[in-house]
Image 1 (cartoon, one colour):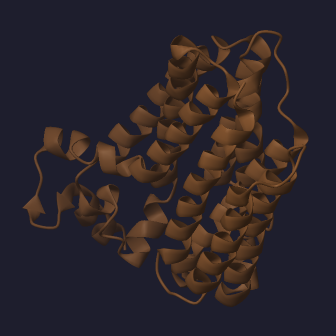
Image 2: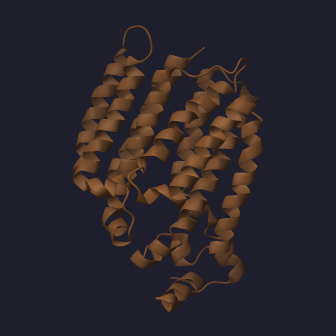
Image 3: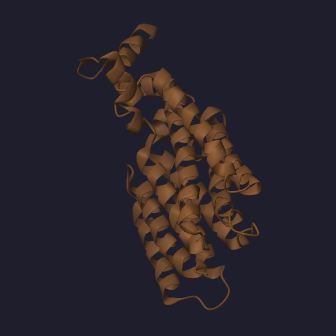
Length: 288
């Protein structure tokens, strides 16, 4: 096994890769770019809806982007041994297009950039965001294989609206329904994201809550959590529920029901689509 690991780490699928190319060419893919981009865009839209000016939006989005990059690179580096065992050739570290040292350095550099960007929004806002980033690192390094695997997702997502609003003049906290909706969405995303990899996770000793529950129950729980998130966004704000809100609830329920019966990445992509629809509702609800 050690010999096989060395060969895979030192070469790509088509043969040896030059050292510089191996160290750098796979870095963009190793940061989990689509989730990182989605969370960053969500933050930017939320900042606009909350009343930030262009500089505040850029600062919030930049801090979150740096945090997401650090978390993504940390995740791929922490999962290297398990990815080698399961033959995850879609991972840059396994395919040999990025070196472990380069990914580890990139994660640390992104984290170091995240700290001053977060604190530039204010001491309390920065502390809140860094707590969410720390929770995500904790998931990568320890909690992923425990019954608390869902907690870092719930905490990090739940604190994201607080990071945005605490950066406003007067440092106001967001309404509880918004934090609850974000936390439920984060927990649901965790269960949906793990579904395709449950068998590989179990084979390599990763026994988080989704792995303990199994694919069927995890899919159902993911749907319920995301539906609960949409319900909190619809019912939380004062006043009557809008037609868009009722349509969002109905569409969310239908999409999640269909996705829960499908294999692969569809449940997670459905969660991301629901999150996009939620963002539209947030823009309407949070306009100053």
